[in-house]
Length: 377
Image (tube, rainbow, N blue to C red):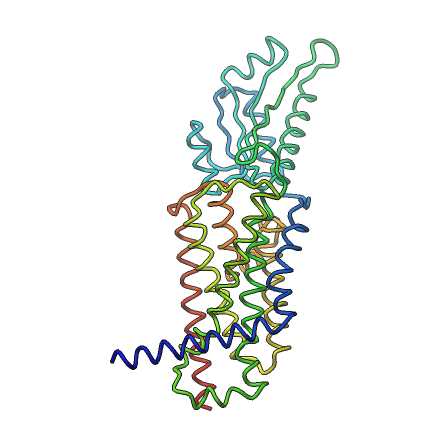
């Protein structure tokens, strides 16, 4: 028993070494593995501006007067905001931000209306989730415009001009670092390219080079073949991840607020999901070109468009929001953004983690099933 186990371990390690040799002999593969992450993290580390709509907002109304209710009514009628149930204190606002149900909050002080008419001026506080700096800035401008419009409406043609001064607070990113929103998205994109696209040609390459027959007559079980093909890309993806983190921290001044252990664990889970998807694509396609095209076009575009990375999902038609639920990178993006930038713990990301684990299990099962079917043929 011990002898057979050692033999199996030796065979598996030899097969893994062979896969590493395949990777390191191909310069194009090495360029994708190590050149693309550096280029993308530098290019995509800068902000992209886009219009935002249907943004969740919470209101803490300590005044409860006519003036505050009129402003709230204007916000509710705006296409830019979606008014959520009112909050009673600051801890509730913080919890809403952590849950991701809102991206901004408006706080009215006590005696807001009285201060406005007696002294001619009053303040309101605008709190925005600045882990996405562009959205936070846009939302703050929208609120300032609504408040400014209300101020003009109540200003008489003559007499004392009323002033309402919004006090802006940028939550999670007071320095307004524009790279924060793009680091999680770039990580998800690179993992999809490295782990899915490159793994998708692993089995197809064996068929095109004529070495599949050797695998068919070898004592290797199908699951061992798939594991051996996945391990090199798992290791190299983790190296990419470390490079990205180092560039983010030391070059782009990104502060990692959450647990590094949780970030690595979630990243490994996402890499396994991507590897399983890549192996499935490799098993159901007939050529390396087809496998690469399916993985790049079928996975890279959804990662760019349907994760909230480049464009807010709230702006999209509902059908695209539904489609986004089957894109694995959407959940990983939400996890990494929450843990890395907001300092959230596992209790806030367990649902996304469970979905990724289910996707990884399902995709790996399908990949193994299709590989066995090809072995039977």
